[in-house]
Picture 1: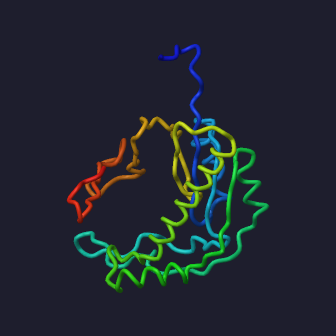
Picture 2: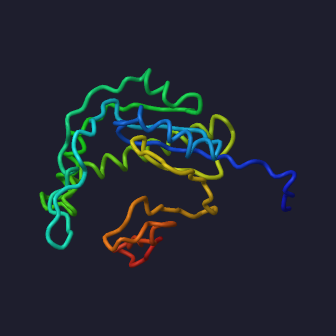
Length: 213
């Protein structure tokens, strides 16, 4: 039975933050203003207890055709302990659960070395990919544990990083069962402004030949 507009319950939205905090004290304000507030969202965080700092431009070095020759994220930067009091102050009162793990970059480097040689795609150290997936998985687990203890479930989930600044409102309008990937700000190499969602990229299961959006 379809609920009428007068009886429909407000949508429950969760925002999952993952990865190194870096500039969180600078970006938390825009995050609350443009992501949390428009969605009346709850916040969850999972990431390392230590973080690096943005000490260099992430422009890398390009060849004549614009291909990346050296990725500044290909190396592992020094880290320092995150101030938890500052973290809680920055994300209160909307943070519902969080976890700082002590797994350092050496473990991700070890895992990356097992599956990849020094010929990294886009010059990106695979240790960063391993770290990213680990942190996203941890944030998802926090969300599911919270849903279980509270006896509820969220209608939509936004996944983003704490070191990103937001300059316009972002609302969780994803349809059930759909994954939306924004194309980001700025302009492409042809001078066209990014608008809407990014084009759909497909994952291919090489064993079965199936493609998954």
